[in-house]
Length: 93
Image 1 (tube, rainbow, N blue to C red):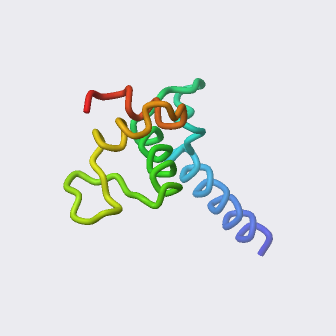
Image 2 (tube, rainbow, N blue to C red):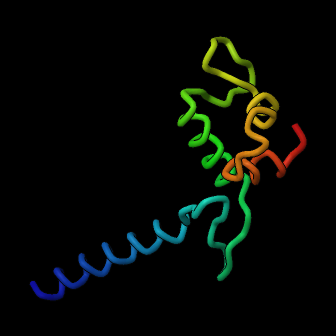
């Protein structure tokens, strides 16, 4: 009985460690990769979407209503916002 409980707990621990390694969390514009912080486009977009949400807006490719804007529109309107700087500087819009 003890051996089976040990085996189950070991499998649960391993599955949890695998999931944590597979999808590292963002910290601002950066993601922990290979022992260091690396600028990541997905993390930069997450920060920019947070800025847009705070303005009651969304970043989309093709705006269809008043509260949606393209990446270019978002970056022009938020060029002085340091939180959006990584997203807007990473690619030309």
